[in-house]
Structure formats: C-alpha cells, structure tokens
Image 1 (cartoon, chains in turn purple, brown):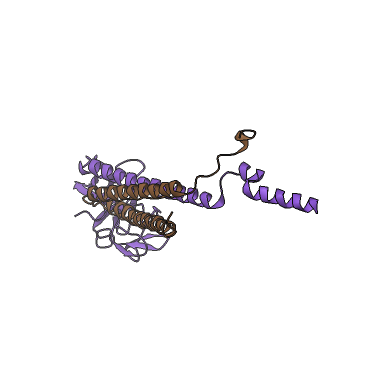
Image 2 (cartoon, chains in turn red, blue; image 1 turned 60 degrees about the horizontal axis):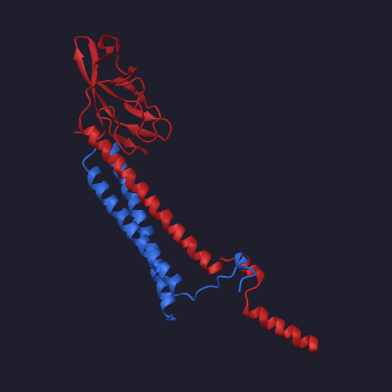
Length: 180
Length: 92
C-alpha cells in the first residue's frame, strides 16, 4: 500500500517535470514543421532570385546583341560547280557554326544554318521534296526562307545572306530566324 | 493567446506560401517566354521582362518577410518553454 502511494507520487512528479528524453530532444514535432515551412519558403524565394537573374542575363545579352556584329565575307562555293539539287556544307561565321548551301531545282541559291532550331540536330536538303529536313524529330523547313513547315522546331532557320561576285558565292551575313 | 489567432495565423502563412508559389510559376513562364523570344531574334522584350521578373522576386521577398514575422509572432505568443536541459542539470 505504501509502495503504491510512493509510485503514484513519483508518477505525478514525472508528469510535472519534463522527462530526460524531452530535455535531450528539445525541438518538438510541430515546431519542426514550422522550421521546414520557413526553409521551404526561403528555397522558393531563392529560386525566384535565380529566375530574376536569368531574366537579367537575357537582358544583358540582348543589349550586347543590339550592336549588330560585323560578319566576315567568305567564299563558300562557285556557282558553276553547283547543279540543281546540290548542296555545299560550310561553317559561317565561325568554325562552330555549320551551314548548308542549297541550289534548288528552279536554280535559286539559299543558305541556312544547319542547326535545327528544335534541338540542334543537323538538317539536310531533301531535293526530291524540295525542303530542309531534320531527321531527329521530323521537323521540316522551307528552303525559300527557312520557315517551319512541320514539326516541333519553334523558329525558322537562321538564314545566311549571300552575294554573287562573278562566279563566286559569298556569305556576307546572318539573319536570325524571325528577323525582317 | 486568443484560441482563434493561431489557426488564422497559420492560414495567413499558408496563403503567403501559396502566393509565393504562384509568383514563382509566373516567373518560370516569363523566363521561358523571354528566352524563346530572345532566341527568335526579338530583343525588345528582354528589358521589360527583366523588370517584371525583378518585381516578382521583390514581391516574393516581401511575402517571405511576412511569413517570418508571422512565424516569429507565433513563437513569441507561445508559452515560454522550459529552459531546463542537459546543460542545466544540477542547477535549481
């Protein structure tokens, strides 16, 4: 009986004072949830900062791009060497910019960047169908002005400006897709 | 502490977080649209898009400060916790 009274008193004392494990683990579950919520919000705000920085980077790039670069002149082929349906591959304006020169069946010449505007696969000229085709995702471009005829490419192909110097075909500039 | 205050505060924090998420979605869309436009050769929209994106970020920051203040208010309103811990063993 006396032992029971003692154990009741001990239990009551335990209820009043925090037990050892409560002292060791000083953060309770509900508070932990609030900490996570704050951290999550902080993560979202940092992501937002990243987005703003991305937009800032695009803005800076567009400011730099407003000053039109001067393109070199490059002889890419001789007109007499190109029969109808023939193509010439060349790099312009830099060595990492592959381009394709096409002589269409009607005799007109056109040159475009060879990188598909979807995922940068190399496009080729399908003479029988008179169109530039990307084999990766069946994106088709018009050899007339580089506009998208079909498929996932979001923009026309950048067009290479050409000029004739006698028999020589000279690349003199680049028009980005969508430029007038 | 007013028993109605805590759920109201919690709802305010939830609402602020939802707003931050919405603003972030708008910012993501804005970034992709601006990039697409830039790659297509239209450079005129980049400045305006940057200004809007910066405004959205500032708004997110303001909401974050609000969440912090509400949360701090919750902690201040709570009953003070026991300061006893392993480092105070043996002290009265």
